[in-house]
Length: 446
Image (cartoon, rainbow, N blue to C red):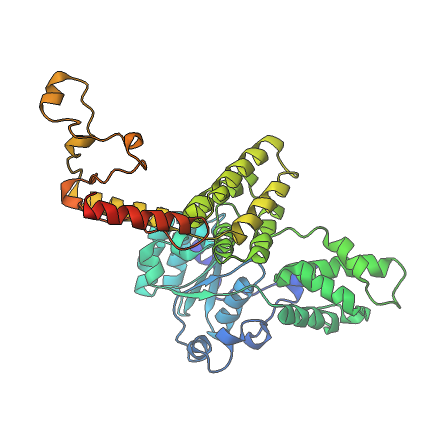
C-alpha cells in the first residue's frame, strides 16, 4: 500500500456521520462537554480535566468506566474541542498493522492526532508495546476506553504515560436527565412524537438502565415503538410497557473481571462487619448474576475459619455443611442454605486469632528456619534413637491428673514465644481463660 493510500484511510478530520436509521442512543449522543451528564465533578468548569481541555493541554487519557458511562462520547467531544484529527480504532479488530497505519498517518498530518482505541484492554502486550514509543514521543495523543481496571489490563509503561479518568455509572438523576432530553429533542430525539411518560414508567426506566445511558435510551426507544403502535398516543407511556420492553434486568457481572471481585469483597467485608442485611444483598447480587454457587460456598467456608474461628466453632461446621448441601442439591434450591450460612456467619462472634497466630508462626519459620525439634517430642522406633535421647522424659498427657503437661515444646530458640492470643469473644473467651492458666503453669515449670 502506498503512503497516499494509507492517508486515504485516515482523513484529516474524522466526522461522526449518523446512519439513516441510527438508534436513539446514537442520535442523542452529546456533542458538547456540558451536555455529558453525570461527570460534573470531573468535567465541570474549574475542574482539572476541564481546564486541561480548554487550554489545549490534553494529556493521553485512559477512560475507565462501565458500559454507557460516556467513554466514547467523551473521546469524540475531546477531539472536537482540541480541533484535532481523531482516529478511532477498536481493539477487537485492530492489530499491530492497523496501529502502525494510524501512527504513520499521524506523522503526515499537520493537525494534532487523537488516537481513540475502544476496549483498549483487549490489546495484547505486543500491540501495546507497538503503541508505546509513539505515545511517549507525542506522535499521537492516546485516548483509550476500557471497562476493565487498567492496572490489570494495560502494561505499566503505557499506564504511566496516561492519566486515568474513572467514570462511574450514571446516577438516577443523570439518567433521568438523559431520558427527559430525549423526550424533548425534536430534531434528534422523540420530541416530534409528543410522547409523554408517567412518573412510574420513568422510575422503572431509570432502574432498568443500571446507570447505563445507552441502555436507558434503547429501552425508551423500544417502549415508544410499542406504545405508539398500540393506538395509545394520547396516553402517557406506562410502567408495564417499559418493563415489557426492558425485559429482565441482567446484572453487570464478570467472573474474571473487577466487578466480580468488588461484589465478593463486599460480601466478605459485610460478613466481617456483622451486617447480615448487607451480606444478603451482595449474596443476592452474586447469585442473580449467575455466579457459581459452589464458589460462593467455598468463600463462606474460608470466612468461617479465618474470621469467626474459635469464637464460634459451629460456624465452620455449618459452612462446610452448606458447601456439601449446595453441591448435592444444586441451584436454585442451594440459595436457601447459602442464605442460612450467610446470616449465621454475619451474626456470629468474630475472631481471627487462629489465622493471625499461624501467620506469626510462619514468620518465625521464615526468619529462623526449621529449628531442631526438642528430643522429648521425637519418636524413638529404634534402639539407636533411644540411646540418643529421642523421646526421653516425654510425659503422656492423659496420664497427668488434669491432662496438662508443663514441659516446653517449642524449639529452644523460640522458648516463651506466644502465637495464639484468643479473644474474649464467644466460645473463645473460655479458651482464653484456660490458656492463661496453662501458660502461667508452664512458665512456672509445673
